Amino acid sequence: MKPLFFLCTAILISAAACNNSSKYNIKTTDKYEQTKETLGETEQKNPSRFITVTGNNKRNLLGQTVVKGTLVNKATVVTYKDVDIKLSFFSKTGTLLEEDHDVVYESINPGATTHFKSKYFAPKGTDSVAMQVVGAKY
Image (cartoon, rainbow, N blue to C red; front, side, top):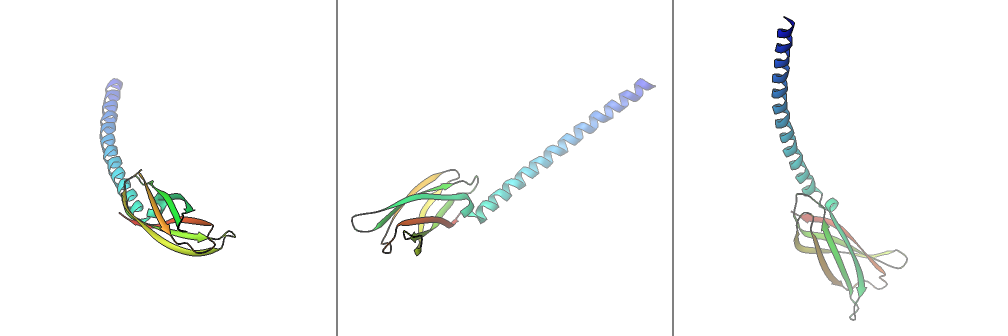
């Protein structure tokens, strides 16, 4: 009687384990797809969180300030384009002299990098230029 009881118990446990694992796989697949969609939506709503800008500036012979920069897309799903960059011109003492916007009309794939160059007649007394990504299209 005892061996029959153990045999039935073992069969029920193995049958229950097989059914639970298939339900678990379906739930994890659905959760993965849901997470993937949520990540894409987050990247679309917050481009400034996923695009970084670095660069430098110098003056040319015509007196223009030449700004060279690099944009890096740290997103994993979204390709950005038409990146809006705010340029802030500062004096030696750190006083904000002027702000301007520049749009980089290129597509940046996830994990990719692109370079840009702009020329401005900066206000008198400009010592440095700060760059910040304001927005982008996807």
